[in-house]
Every structure is written in C-alpha cells, then in structure tokens.
Image (tube, rainbow, N blue to C red; front, top):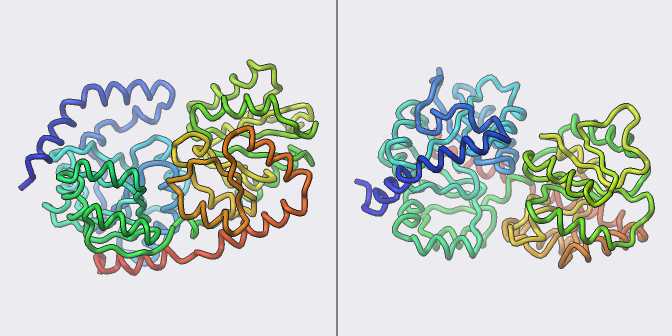
Length: 424
C-alpha cells in the first residue's frame, strides 16, 4: 500500500497539474516539441511493443548521450527485445531520435508525470520487464508503481552530490522509501555509492561513468574538420553548453581581455531556445557575430569575433573544431556540464569553480593535467591568452586530455553484468 506521504505527494502533483500543463504550453512557444504527445505525459500512450520491452529513462540531452553505449549493448545482448526510451525534455527526445534513428527496435515516449495513477497506467500499457533510470532520476510514485507491478528498477550511471543528499534526507519518508525500493544501483564513484547507501539504497555497486564509453562518431569528426576549414587558422576558444547568466559574464570579461587580434570566441548555449538571445547579447555590444546555421560557402568571416553554435546534436563537431574548451554551467553554481566529451576529442578543458555535478571526473582531469580551474570569467580569458602564447603547454594538455578520456572505459560492460541479473 502507498504510504501517506506518497499519497500526499501524488495529490500535490494533481494540484499542480494545471500550472504544469500551462508551463508546457508556454515552453512550446519557443520549442514546439513540448506540445507534441501531451497525452503521453498523462500516461496515455499509443504504440504497444511487439516484443518484450526494456525501458530506459534518460531525462535530457546529457543523460541520453551518456546512455548511447548502454542502449547499443542492450540491443545487441537482447535481440528478442525492444527498447523504450523516455525523456522529460524536448531536446532530450530530439537527441534520442537522432542517435537511434536507424534502430528499428527503439521506441520513444515522454515519461508520465509522477502520480500513482499516471505511472500505473503507463506500466499497464507498456508492460516493461525492467525500468532503467539514468543518473539521478528517483521518482517516488514511479518507483512505487514499479514495485506494485513487479517491475525491477535499476538506477545506472548513478550520482548523488552532498547537496542533493542533504536535500533528499529532509524528505526521507518519501525519497528514502523510493531509494529502498530500487532493485540495484550502478554508481559512478565510491563517493556516489556511499551517499546513495546513506539515502537508503540497498544493492549498490560501483561501475564507473558511462560517459567515458561514448565514442566520438566519425561523422562528427568530419563535420568538425569541415567547420575548422571554414574558420581557418585562427585561435578558437569554445564555450560549451553555457547556461543563462554565464554569457553576460563572458561578454563583460571578453571586452576587457587581452587576446590575439584574430582570436575567435565560439559559444554553444546549452538550450536551443536561447540561441537568438545569446547572439543578440553580443551584437548589442557592437561585436561582429555569425551563427553556425547561417554560414555560407565563404565560411566564417575573418573579422568575426563570435560564432554562435546554434545547431543541435553537433557538440562533438564543435569540440573537434576548437583549440580548447570552457565547460559551461561551472561559472555559476549550477554544477557544470560533461567535460569528458571535450577530452575525448583531445581538447584541453577550462573549468569554473562549480563542478559538483561532475566532481570526480573534474578533479581527475585536473590531476591528469587535462584541465585548468579558473575562478571567474576574467581568469578564463587570462588563462586563454597564456595557453595561446605557450603552445607547448597546449599540446601537452591535449595529449593528457586524450589519455584521461581513455583510461576509464568499461562502465558499460560492468553495468550490463548487473542488469543481466534482472533480465535473464
């Protein structure tokens, strides 16, 4: 029977539903993908599987890309199964569609909102043989509905920061119960495993980070080399996956920085609805701005100061085209984004002070000489100038980045071994 706290939580979702649906409609003004398949978010799904179903939930872009090697491994190991990939964000769903367009056994749907009735309806419709949640997706009603339906739940590539642990322990009756109902956990690090056990999870193993197993697609390498040809021999700093508020800090520091006259700043905002906003921010300051989607046969103008990466699914190409990369989400207390992809392309990394979402990989990259820490945007451009002057250090960091990205592969194999206990 659901606990009182779980019932109240589910009722709270119902009470918030008008606001949630209004926000969905509002976001759809800028991202039409949010207005597609609204019935799925209420647990009313179409398209039933024709084969036994493995269900994997990847909330957004980062989790979906991290899940890529695991999805391919599952499809290979279980050829008589289909795979359902669920998301919460439009960019996550678009990423999944792009990554697995050729996989005929992959279905996609929205994750239903976390009420007991919606999640139960979703499970009755799809009847999955396992629920695999990526990274931090602990949804109390969903996990309780899986327990009632006899569907094992695996939390893979799992991470939990100290801040999230403290927040979760304040709601121990709800989240602690959910953690105890999880069948198995594949944690990224020993520290994550300890915190997940403190939250209440029982069967916890350390398998490493799936992001180390993601391979750079050859098509993206070619696209990156082509973009570099359009840019030319100019020095390029990529600011990747920047978040709201960071571009203003970068702009203010850029205006004061000492940089080579042919220096090109390239910014790829994390969220596509902000492409226009970021381009306008720099244009309004009188800077010469181009957008990747609008490049013509003449390539990037020699007098362009900023190139806005306003295309989806090409982050590996942007990393390939740059000389080194700043990882967004780390100037402000947002936890940072994935630095492993940049390292896999052999690019040195600059990190802001806030990297708690990728704490261990960040510290390991720093220790390996693949990354440098900066305290603010001003120091970011100061370090940029230093690296451009010292090409030998830049080359050394590039080699270190490649070695770092390659030294921890194997999380997919370890995760598959754990999941096999539920899928046999």
